[in-house]
Image (cartoon, rainbow, N blue to C red; front, top):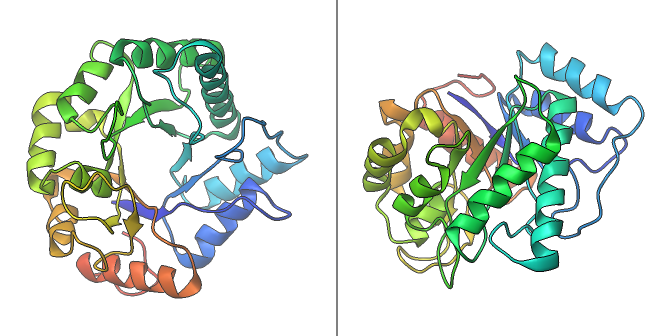
Length: 271
């Protein structure tokens, strides 16, 4: 199992700084935004940023990395919002390829499922990825309104007969009404766990079925011990776990302590 946090790319080193922080915390995977998640404005890569990140990544044993797409992206939209969403996602995919990043995760959006599917494939086409380019993963959602992905069967239909994969979020599944063991069974049966390489490991502020997408620190939300059983399920032992939990020195120490205790690891080691 590889694990880590969603890291900031603010600061002089930019994306390379996220890898530096990962080394300091003893992480074996990270997630980042490649640009502001709440703006359509793109972000150019700084001089030397690519080389520095790639070098740090290699020195850390590969450090599996995920780019999370902008929160503004709605692949199921129409008109200008649809076009902006496709180009924003294509930009993240292209950056991932340049940086040697393995995965890009995106929320499918709100609207018709076929529109989201078509837009995701269009973004892949525009990014002009190489044979070993990044893999695009659609994330399950907490539900509400026309949001796609709350029902895992719908998510399975979205990626059927495509190169797309899935990122599974524990908080979102819980908020959508699932028990995590039930969700894992459903992922295995309808999607196939080989198509779910990344898991967002988050507790939930809202109750089961609340449709509230509000993450909490491990064991400080409503999911509780159910999370531990999920993490220790042998079917997910080869996955990349990303904690999108609150970030502070105290929060990080808490979440790493809880996860490492579950994995029966000494502090500061990787698994």
